[in-house]
Image (tube, rainbow, N blue to C red; front, top):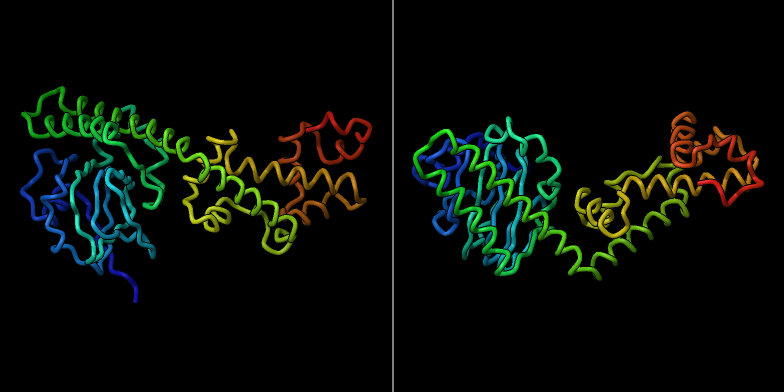
Length: 307
């Protein structure tokens, strides 16, 4: 049976759902999660919001994202972007926390609106939440308190700028704390890097590309039970390269081996590697090595100086 999804378009609709009074500001709201009547939410319904959410909370129980359930420790921060769907099951009990909701219209004409896509944690899965210390939690709450104060004060010409500036400051701190989390969980992160490399190696060793085509980011992230964005950020943090760059470098390495060790045509090699068109293969190869596949094959006297 397909899950019912309710679309929440405005902050006012959200307040009605939470059985709260009308918001003080139409585009942004800070909610004390302890004041939310969660028994008013249907556990069989997904709630799709047309705005951003940043929430710091501690659950007693679990929250479901997609088909999976995740437990939260004290001081976990989650992020969702407009259009994502959340489901709170009947076993969820909120113990403490706050939530910041802000509509894209609030930031559209600001620098934050132009750069918010750079905060990739809005596309992380809930199981990739940010875990913060008491000190970090206090820093975030200070930002949120200032936003709430502006929302509840008399609106003047400075209000929107101050709200948006504090949201940007909040997100910048979250970005810093995620960097810390990647580093403090170095063993876990290194294990993920190694698992990714094994999967990449296995893909070409088993010649999966000849049947399924070129591997994409989703192929690896799904097998590692990670969001594509989280995997990309983790790989970049520890290797300096994105998921796509790793895939391309492995493709070029396989191509070099085939160009050197076989007499197969460039079209045949491009097909062996999973490319639909030889021109796409040649373009990628030249981008990464500075030579066309044919030039590389003819340059056998200098194998170490290429790519």
